[in-house]
Image (cartoon, rainbow, N blue to C red; front, side, top):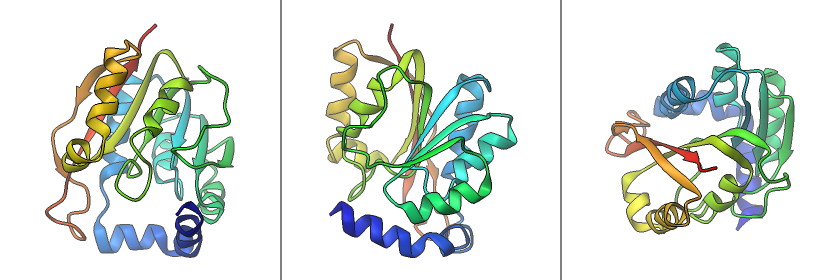
Length: 195
């Protein structure tokens, strides 16, 4: 239920960064940003989809990425993100719903820690592709077990079969939360939107 999920994150927002750092040693934002640095110029207009408290945007802004838009299901999380000053625009939107942006709006989309069970469904990727310009990139984190078992493999393969995007890179597996979930592997996926 999206309303319950948003409420839970609204309540967690003020403690979120400390909890992820101290209790989980959350590494996915840093890992994902490394792929942005490799594939996306700093002049790019980037959507941080499921931005939460702005951990990814803060890292990108430290690398001189200035044109950043944040969306998240939780206004409370976006309020924390807004205070960090990395984003030009922040809006409440839910992945899995139609995104209220024109097609081909962004040079790149980054989505970290959101495409997973109980959060953003596999068909969220269709909208991320739609709002990304031809030649642009969609970069996201995902657990291999979620890829195999939650419909993502089928959607990702279908988008390739429709010639909408091409796989550029899948990063090596890493433990995204070595303290909190020491056995859970994640990977970073990089797709380029076809012209």
